[in-house]
Length: 441
Ligand SMILES: [Mn+2]
Image (cartoon, rainbow, N blue to C red; front, side, top):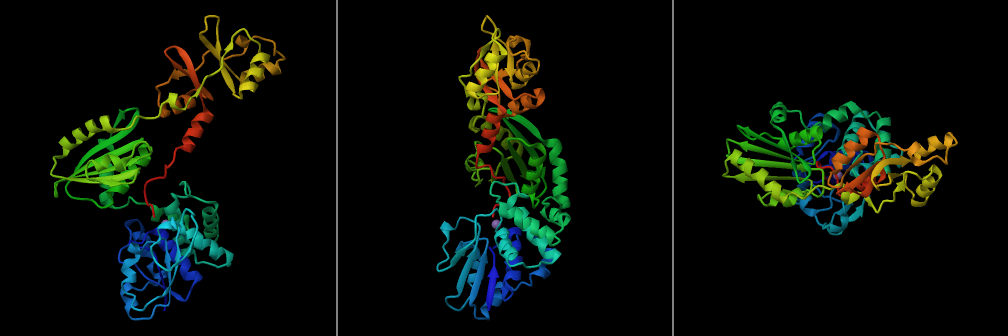
């Protein structure tokens, strides 16, 4: 017998991969994990018939010749299957999109690419072979790709994920169904918590970071709380969110945290409470504490332990050139060419900031044939400037509000630098790892 399986606690990418295995290698039987990841439970309920799974225990009976393992390369995560294989030395082929350096399944043949989703690798094989899928199979596979790629927007996404997604749409995948399978907040109990959380939210500016906090008492534990917290995060878009629940029945404080800034390292922060997780997603359970007292104490500790937010002075271009108000448009355009910037601050006789002149202003002068006119005739007389201590969020707000591309940064009445839209975007692009928290496998 030939068999295929994914990791324990099968998730959506696992199921997506397996549906392709079934199409590509029809002589392999798929084996079901004892556990289905909660995020995959709904899809599994509707579509389990399409997999025609056997149970790990069924493996005891036969002789296993070939094995395909998908979406993991770690022995620990497939132990529940391997323990039932009685014969020695089956041929093992691993198809995984994780870093396979840590693979500890001996003698296995490794395949796969670092695509956003493992499903995409198998999807490429299916495309190359010109396979046809049922609409239901295409829906299963597309859900897998969307789950592991945050709907094709995480940093791990490759062109191949898009290609396979397009192919699946062609095969009749239903985006409506995919969307509903990806919805993680749908139980009544979760929605009730969500409704109670929203009015309980408070935002605090801590070290320049916009931090969202909430405290809620629950009778008993509600499953899928972290999905609710992620939903709130999505709605409010803070730098970080700390949701604190007091579970009356078990007298436990549950702390669930999400961050969007790698500077706010949640794994490290929550270790102090015996918790942990990833940099951007972590949780802790604290026994024997009274809820509200813990909440107050936790906020106070954040004031001390939170890393300061990035400020204008951290990302500005320093050593900014300026131009005197009596200089001509021609002179300023030559200066801009020299320094490769789109605009410069204008100074008056007292060396004070009195305007800003950019390419657009010069263009107007050029059209009017007035390149010899003084800068004052065409500059904008209300230069937008800000203090070096403002945060990224405030910079963003100023750009949008004033429709400008350059923000002059002053410290103690002196021009210290300029933040351009380009500086801002470069910084946003470079700050990794900024993977979205959520399903990671
Ligand atoms: Mn995966």
